[in-house]
Amino acid sequence: MKLLIVNPNISQSVTDLIAAEAQRSASGDTQLTLRTAAFGVAYIETRAEAAIGAYATLNELAEHYAGHDAAIIAAFGDPGLEAAREMLPIPVVGLTESALMSAAMLGGRIGIVAISQRIRAWYSETVDRYGMTSRLASIRCLDEPLPNIGSVQQDKGEQLVALCEAAVREDGADVLIIAGAPLAGLARSVAERIPVPVVDGVSCAVHQAELLARLNPHKASAGSYAVPPEKSWTGLSPALGQLIGRQRIS
Image (cartoon, rainbow, N blue to C red; front, side, top):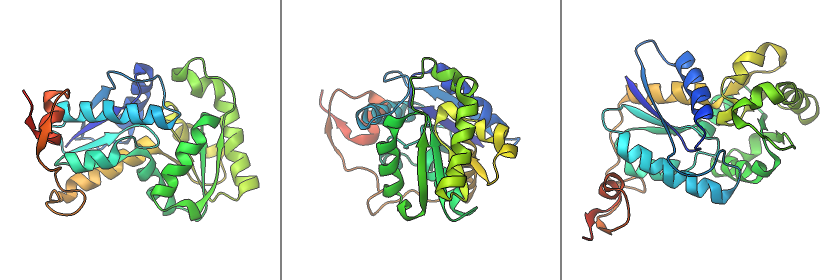
């Protein structure tokens, strides 16, 4: 099996964290291809940044999906996920949806711990989009600048653990999601210190992608996830244009 994993952020250090956790989580015979967005921001916090990250992600997916059995969008908030499912003939999963669906099978009330207060609105809207707001206990976030996104686990690890403990003690969380690609692998390292199950978006997404690839579903030919209609296009990469419109304006 081959999985394509795209980091919608431009930080190679974050891609390295994603790769390490994905490799720990993947089956022994699964091959991983990691790609980092060619343009965008160091880490996504806002709706505008998410829109840019979605476009960068669709470009990477279009260029590199061939030969892969499934793809993963490796940013919490899943920028571009629904569009990618329309566009590609292989299953596509995101960190948020995978983590939420996994967490829902481990407990009733779900707490999310994240890296930034500014990210809260986008995360809340993403949870609502997946119909999980009624299960959300809280979103707790760090509230200070992050000078090095690749070292946030080392720099802020104890504060993140404290946020997890507060989500359980004060918000009634039955299960926690440690959210965001920069925190990939942290759930694994602190699980014994937290009194409820803790899940990680990267590991959940890898397992979900492997499962969907093994199910080998047919690409939709009807409904809202059918291939986009043919139309003229210009200004896109050839790979993305062929998937989106298939009729280029010369």
